[in-house]
Length: 191
Image 1 (cartoon, helix red, strand yellow):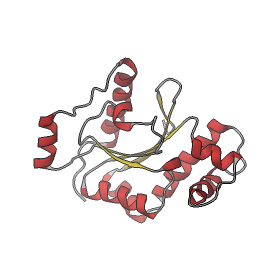
Image 2 (cartoon, rainbow, N blue to C red):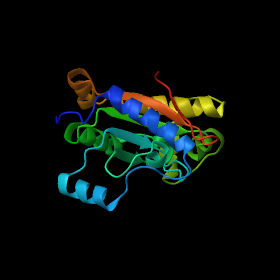
Image 3 (cartoon, helix red, strand yellow):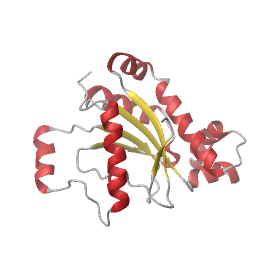
Image 4 (spheres, rainbow, N blue to C red):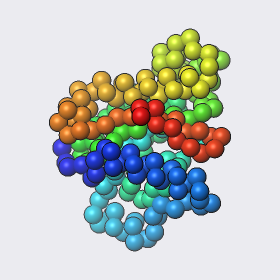
């Protein structure tokens, strides 16, 4: 494994401070400059955190955490559910890019969670809603269901033998969080 870019505690603090800047800002303040693009092209990417989040167009991790090019390794899938593909991406970023923090970022008013709770989708959507149903069981409160879904994905990540080794050997940390569409705040569920 490569050395961490920064410690999990530093990465979490950076995300929390970035969210505070986001809440106070009228525009994205992460570094997306030509020089940053050139730097990451020449030196490679060294993200400080892995974010697994929903595909919802209102959830933009780089903006939410005031991050720029090369800061975050973002994995997006409806309902922030985990399967082997997403888990492989997490393992890659932790092992080869030095990310010390993994954040499963759910959000309020999640359409995928609503579909699992209140509808019977078919087609490939059913793969997503079936996984969410396993996570939330019979929960009827939408917010609580969203939190349970996040915690289920977090647990799935932590079942990976590679992630377990990284947690033990290197101090990798996996946390859950909720993005509140109503006001833009991020609530970390593990604090």
